[in-house]
Image (cartoon, rainbow, N blue to C red; front, side):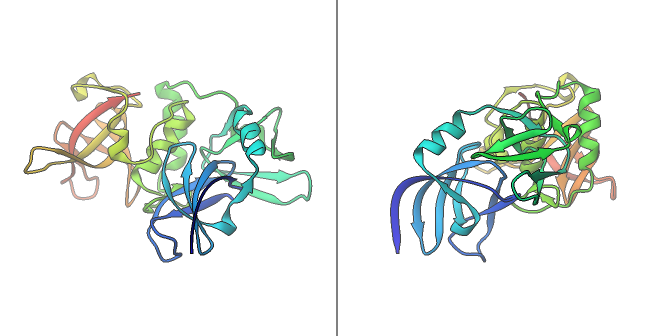
Length: 269
């Protein structure tokens, strides 16, 4: 049975899969992180069709994996300051109410954060302040290199955006969020944002690079995204998060020396 309505929910698990259809066997489109809110647009047989507030992605979530909110709770929570962000691949928060621990992934925003404490819907949590950036990190080459090295070798997972598995655009969106850059979820959407950089020689650390091919209809089809560490080095998630050489043609495999992805565009945010 399908019921259409508008309601609200919040994620109180580390991650929640968002699927293409209302089934555990369906493809994972993306994931929601702890503390993220969403708008419920439809209900079907124990599943909610939601729109994620952070990046606008839609899909189906198991109704047991999210917690419904009243409209007042939703308005108050979304109006509260998300003034800190988990900056390492994984950190642990401890509930002050029952002592339970919650693993939190990089990119998780914390509301009402102060001195290692934050709150969600009146529940208070403690977290190691060293795991948290209270302000967006400054996008310098040193900061960027120190941050991304902790993400090396995270395995590829379609729709993933956590330390146990990421896809290429999940990796780029999480990393850029640590530097205060809010970008869309999918590579083809990310390629529509920012400003164009004409040549690799003009690029700088933190620019996004997009790969794919030109269709017979002369349309650009973006299939992959990475982040430049320098004009000749890209970090990206393909099989795993790794750094490889890049030139004006594309990415050069560290294992085979062959091109694996054709360069289409460079964007700065």
